[in-house]
Image 1 (cartoon, rainbow, N blue to C red):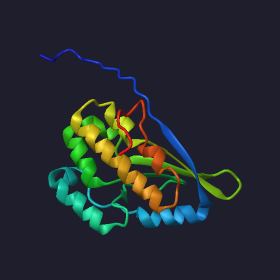
Image 2 (cartoon, rainbow, N blue to C red; image 1 turned 90 degrees about the vertical axis):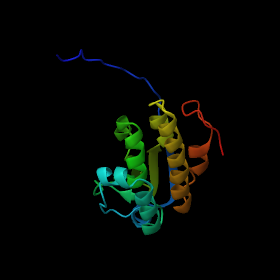
Image 3 (tube, one colour; image 1 turned 135 degrees about the vertical axis):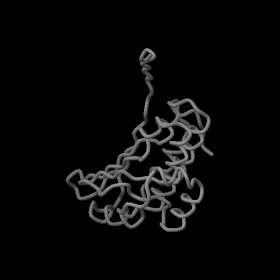
Length: 170
């Protein structure tokens, strides 16, 4: 006999961070795709099985420790670290809602790129599990490092205390 269906609704807030990059749109896209190469490597099943080894491989194989999971469409990327994604999905399959991360880059018509990204920990915190919360904070720091390396002044905003993510600036 089938058990009755259970539906849960969780309301959570996600903070979107927007920053002018101080560089041209074309140059930002070029720099982002050097730091986060637009190639597929591995899959989440393999990453979950290999755990830390997959994360270490990606860290060593890329300048930023991230890889794009799919070919970029226009100026929006789905990206992340397959090793970390495997760990968080192993902890809670609902984490697939927040991994991979998304980043959009756009031009306001003045030829300067602007980016928009959601704070990773806000989504992972909504799962209310210590493992996903810790990984969300780790991704906040990794994303801040990536943006800092790209010259985008958003790292402090990603790491600042948020009423939504419950963590404070390290």
